[in-house]
Amino acid sequence: MCGVTTTISVVNQKGGVGKTTTVASLGAAFAELGKRVLLVDLDPQGGLTFSLGIDPEDVDVTVGEVLLGKAKPADAIVVTEDGMHLLPSNVTVTQAEEALVSRTGREQRLRVALDKVADD
Ligand SMILES: Nc1ncnc2c1ncn2[C@@H]1O[C@H](COP(=O)(O)OP(=O)(O)OP(=O)(O)O)[C@@H](O)[C@H]1O
Ligand SMILES: [Mg+2]
Image (tube, protein in one colour):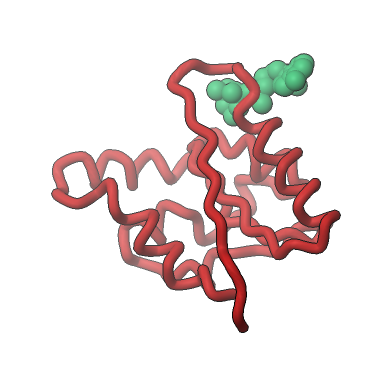
C-alpha cells in the first residue's frame, strides 16, 4: 500500500493535563476522516487502553513486550470497538521500563517497532 504515515506523540511529564484525552480524541477524529489509526498506550496505568473499552488487566501482550523485543507489534495490536487499532498497555509495562533503563539505544525502540507496521 502506498501512502504517508504520520506519527504524532503526545507527551508531558505532568500528570492529569489531558494527554490521554487528546490522543483518544485525535484518534477518533482521524478515523472519522477515513485515516487508518494506530494508537499507542505507553502509560503503565493503561488509561488509553481503558478509555477505548479494553480492560488493561485482560491484555496478554502489551507495548512492553514490543519494546523489549519479546513480541512483534502485530502480536500486540488489538482492534477497538471504534475500528481503530491499539498497541495496549497495562501495569506490566513498568517492568519493561525498568529493564530498559540501562540499555543503550532504548529511546529508539518505539520508533524501530513502529517502523515495522508503518506501511500498514
Ligand atoms: N479539554 C479538556 N477540558 C476539560 N477537561 C479535560 C480536557 N481534557 C481532559 N480533561 C479531563 O482532565 C482529566 C485528565 O485528563 P487525562 O486523563 O486525559 O490526562 P493525562 O495527562 O492523560 O493524565 P495522566 O498523567 O494521569 O495519564 C480527565 O478527567 C479528563 O476528562
Ligand atoms: Mg493519561
